[in-house]
Amino acid sequence: MDSSKKIPDWVLVQRKKGTEIHRRGDNFYLCKVSSVWDNKLKRSRKITGEYLGKITKEGIVPPKQKQLLAAFKQVTVKEYGASSYLRAIAADIEESLKRHYPQEYKELFVLSALRLLEQTPLKRFGFYYQNSHLSEVLPDVRTSTKFLGPFLRDIGSRRKVMAAYMKEFLVGSEFAAIDLSEIFTYSEGVNAAMLGHNHKGEYIPQINLALVFSLDKTQPGFFRMIPGSIRDVSSVVATVLELNLKGIVFIGDKGFNSEKNAKAFSAGKLKYILPLKRNSTLIDYDILKRGSRKEFDGVFQFDKRHIWHYTQKRGKEQIITFLDEKLKAEETSTLIYAINQLQKKDETAENTKKIEGYQSRVYEKDYMLGTIAVRTTCGKSAQEVYGLLKSRMDIEKAFDIFKNILESDKNYMRDDKQLEGFLFVSFIALQFYYRIYGKLIEKELLNYYSVPDVIEYLKRVHVLKIRGETQFAEIPKKSRKLIEKLEYLLPEEPITKKG
Image 1 (cartoon, rainbow, N blue to C red):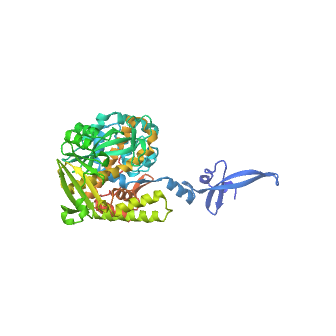
Image 2: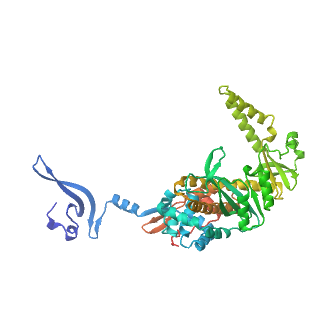
Image 3: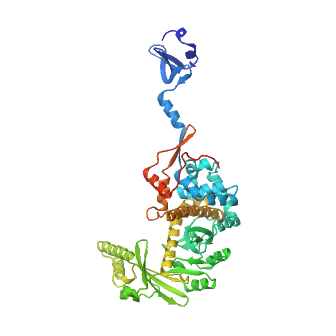
């Protein structure tokens, strides 16, 4: 390099300790420089290091790689579609939470929303929140598990506030009360968790829920936590009496069927639909044994299945038997497959007994296959009763999503109040689930999309923030198609106003 006198002052000013200026024609460049002792030369040797950029009168222009890295650091990507859609269709839920929980509504709304959208346990709540558009429109939500544990205990301890919130959604003229059982917990401090047997016959600490569901509005309206050992109707009747609702029917599972419970329901003036086990003596299989469809009361279509039915009177009760021929074919196929698999194995007394049992169901008792029977006092048509029975199954299936998350959060559920807070969050998440479900019904899309489908497709809509400016990332074709069918209008520019 020429002497420093030939280098302009605006170039020299950029030279700091540990740097060196290089000249290439009329251009000047800055590099890091250092020195090391060279034993062979017995003197220091200069080492040119990292290239820092081109020197201009305006300053140093970093290398292109550094410019790209700096640009990337100024880009954030956040999920937008699902969270913004949920907020749009559940605005009344957010407003109700704001009225009843003015200091905590943000945490409740966001925690419940991410419970549904990401099925996230508490420990990952903060991560999903920071990567969601919710962090822009509902800022400063407290997300640490150290905070959320006591927070949920506080929420769970205020049952009156919780009940007042839920009663706002008990609208409509027809309601179903159902029990959501087998929510397991090993937390020693949860007194409501008592030993109860699950479907495998195992005795595990568990709690139950009584859930009231608005049938004509298709939304959950109320829940009450019940000690896990209670399987009679007293808890359900108490819940209904607490609400003073008319037009309510209890839809139980097979574990609720007993003469004692039926009498207790009647005494409490609560109508019921109770599924019967196939070996129940209340079911008259003679019509099925004779095999003549002419003896049935009729047939209707449900979810592309033909359902045959006949009804028998038993005092104030109706015993309704349904035959789903597609279900019968599926059960027959399953049994025959099981028989064939067992016949390939070594002949043992246990395998022989299983084969004989399966063969009996296929041959001697095949008239039971594909049947569903109930006892009811609701006075509705067979088709309406079947629809109510299936609605219970749908609700239970939806709540199963949150049961799995509750299991992963068992370490944070240390007492009854904390558990009640967790369940309240799951209840709000269930409200969100049925808001999406209701939109699918409204837009006649239920045959094409499920609630999880909607969530997954909408989650593919992302918003980019580049150097403070926001814009949408490219929206996948399937996501765009669903957005059009839902008639959900995305703004031209992402909404970032904080509220």
